[in-house]
Amino acid sequence: MRKIVKITTSFFYLGHSPFMPGTLGSLAGLLIYFVVKDKLPIYTFSVLFLFFLGILFSSEAERIYKRKDAKTIVIDEVCGMMLSLFLVPYSVWIMILGFALFRVFDILKPPPAKAIEKFSGAFGIMFDDIIAAIYTNFILQIICRIFPRIVS
Image 1 (cartoon, one colour):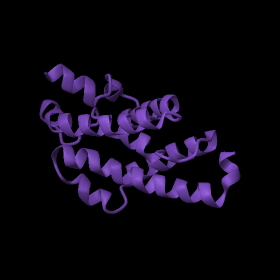
Image 2: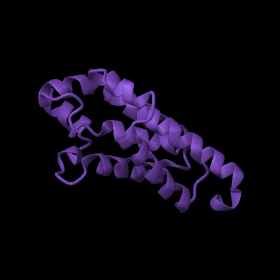
Image 3: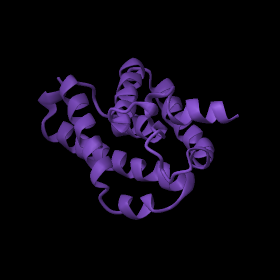
């Protein structure tokens, strides 16, 4: 079971990278997004599946790694990145901007993400990234409506 938890929460060991594991997790989310972006039922299922896997395994991963929100846990970044682009019209520019915004919000942790991050276990791990994703998605939705040429 420990191996399943490690594989899942590190997203196939991406989280074990010494080089920016959170960014690599976000890039994995971007890759999945690119593959499923035009298949809304699969996209929706993927986001929900990743979220529930994160909720299910993140608390145990903290115990295994003996650290609160260990950097090796990146399933939250994968899920958050995908949620950031959910129902946003596709364009390369929006994808790049979404990635950049999500990373900034994930790192800076604007309210209430900073407060939520302090919770231990799956709630703290997953929901601070969900907040970052919601901020990112909101901004992207506005940009796509104000500047529709970006997505055409």
